[in-house]
Image (cartoon, rainbow, N blue to C red):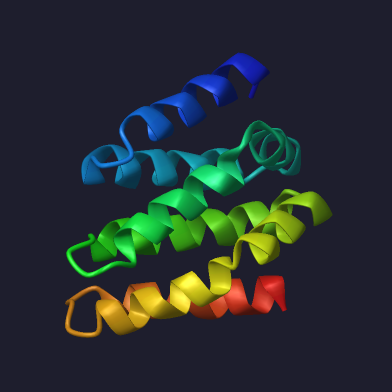
Length: 128
């Protein structure tokens, strides 16, 4: 993935921070692209950790979308696992794990809670 593609993805997520559909698909795209270490590093260097953290923060709140929170956790997990120490440091520094745990509490009654819990556990393992 080239720098222009990363920039466009991150800009799109930022420009549509309040749109759950854009956030959901954007985080899913980060997950798919970050499957390769090189792409994960490019995404992390381009601001994908901050974008996924922003999506998680927005949707960990009451009234947020549990599915977006799940995809944001998955994206953070993938970036932290494949994006190198910088991505892990950024996710830790942002407090992503605490926000992910808060999302579980916020969405305790949502039908997709088990999937969210799965990605929070994976994020716990990845961030240690």
